[in-house]
Image (tube, rainbow, N blue to C red; front, side, top):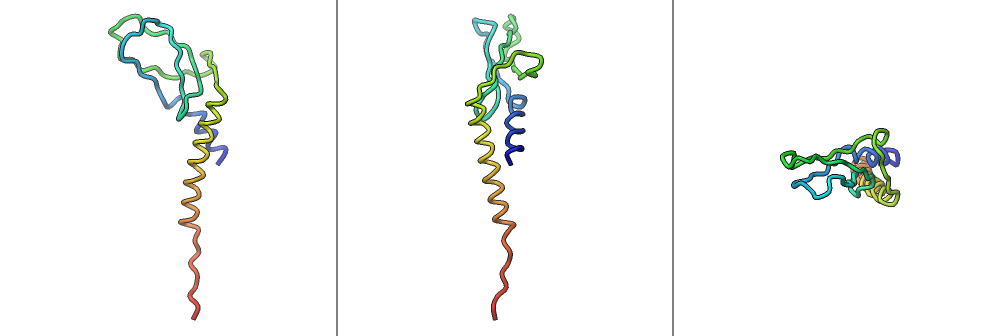
Length: 105
């Protein structure tokens, strides 16, 4: 369960995106990615044209772009996924794991 929770936590920045509706005043913005608590931060240069908005900003690989990881946020995200998987596993185990008892005559 720990490994599955860790893999899901590390994959969430690639799944969740940030949306910008209007052109901001500063074109260089810092965005946080991840879920349920964002833990990976990247700087992005936004387009200067106001026709490009609304804009969807995606997470890029940490190998290509400088990424700041926030360990406390990551631990909370990991803990939430771990508790979710643990609860689902516990419910399924209790539902499917019951052995029917024979009636005594």
